[in-house]
Image: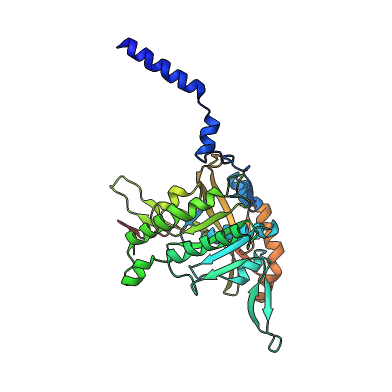
Length: 357
């Protein structure tokens, strides 16, 4: 038995000595470039960087911005879009939540051209270095995926010569085609569509653009709607869950959570005069929940304003108040207003035993 084994080993050694691995790879088409590009970032505000110790949005990755309503997700998305424009990266807005405001986008620094009717002087449209679609043409998960894939196909053909930053607001705001046809918003069907359309297709195309062999680098940033799962026992804790199933969570390499599990976790900062008030900022908790790029996970507090994030310190808050006081005076009818900072609101958000429809 030992003799047979030694003969087998000798034969294998002889075969290996004559084997040409490079020739085998060449024959099987396995000699493609396996190197990935050096990691680049789309920078967010200095406040975001200070609080998180992260430069911004990692290019070539799937990024989730999640949290309850009005906690800073859109602010982060718009900061990314503004920075992308400045670097020649094409922002592609996919707005299915339909809470979009061009005034807010311009306030944040988006370069937007107003299309004006020469006869009436009325603004009839907005144009510029961006692509925008909404529920007028995008009504299902399949529509979103198909649109993204189509633009990447056009890019590959040379018809769209830009790195693309896809910005979807938001996962959980549109159902799958099966849910639409049955007139029943079925969470399992929707999760299945997200897995099939994104997990097995779109997400792979996005991450493959990180390879040296790809002439462009594409990035997908998604706002993810959330819900709160009830604690499983009296001593347990509720959990923050993503709408749309787990496919995007598993495929994402970078996840930022805004606010708390059972509440938005924000406190309002207002200017008040004679019963009128302007809410000009909110203090919010922010946490890097997942980071497969450089491993840094942090948590802290940041202040979101209509113009972007600022640091939560007296110096920056005072400067922001000084910079904007004329705007608030015009709204409130005078500059003798007072600034009020509310305590953090902990109003509970309803928790569920399973994802709500």
